[in-house]
Image (cartoon, rainbow, N blue to C red; front, side):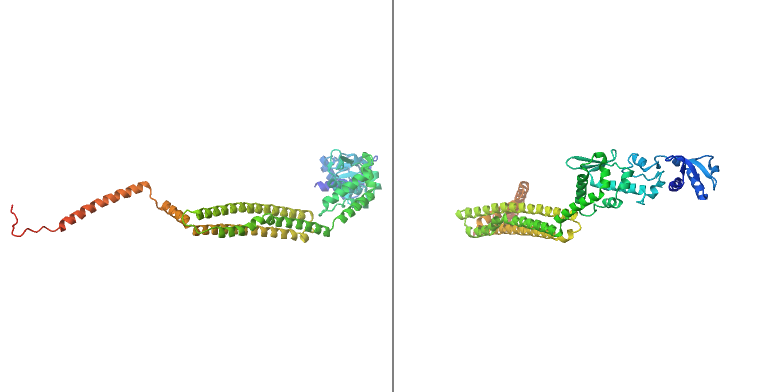
Length: 446
């Protein structure tokens, strides 16, 4: 409904004859029913249009002129006598209202797409201000000023008039609104355009800087294009490839250095194995050979622990390198998304190489543990007393009963032995032979 009322009001305003230029009271000729319906719509929405008709709606007769007055609510639409009056309203120079009307030219916001009209040129400049908002540090809406950061704060007040709109080159201004691309180089191009703007208007008084910029749009575009050519000459796909290749070589060196830093310690592993194999002797008892073998085994433990710490440290170093390689890859994809696929394989190769080095370190650690196990086997084979002592100690620890259980078993053994003794005594008595009587004697009778 609101759009219909606004359309009706603009229809009336385009054929409205004011009493004096810029006045919102005058005559309107009702040519047909469409004109009368437009008046009726505006009268019914008086709160927004503020329209009144002398003689009310009954005076609106087709084929006759009617005296009317309208004064739209400021929050609903803006009506100005001239374009300069419109530009003097708060914030109209940096942002166009949704509905506005210029009485002297009979143009409204509905005509903003036509850049040959005053409102069309005005709408183009507003679009330029919004484009420069992304180039500048920020847009101060209260002061209606673009603020750039160039050796401190640099203000570019958005101040222009109808005369500036008529004298500017529409095609060049339109080109300025699309200079900054939205692709990979947006940040760099915005910085170059900001530099070109500041250099162009720096020598002008603050109040006339924006007017000067509109009238010299061609010079601004030329300065920007020259800066872009210099930047483009410094950036190329081949140069990016060279940069990535240099980074790849650097990281390959760092990855290889992880092993080269501890290569002397790694070469000590077979040396330690030879020492264990040659220095351990067959030891009987607790003689000299026993203590020599024990000292060699202790040295083997010290070597394994220290080398294991070195290997663990290098594994952490590889982890840091892998994280840095991943970060560099993400940054490349973010800044050069369009060409990242062609050079991103180098980072994948680096990640694979780092993983291989990590696997090698774990394999070396496995050999280290295996060597330690073999050293123990050799020690206990060549030092049987040590093995026997340890085996007997372990066996005694596992088989020794608890004190209470020992006493209980002892008491049970004693109890069992007593009846066994009595039984044996009885058996002995029953089976013992009766002594024979002497010859010639008779057994005594009682």
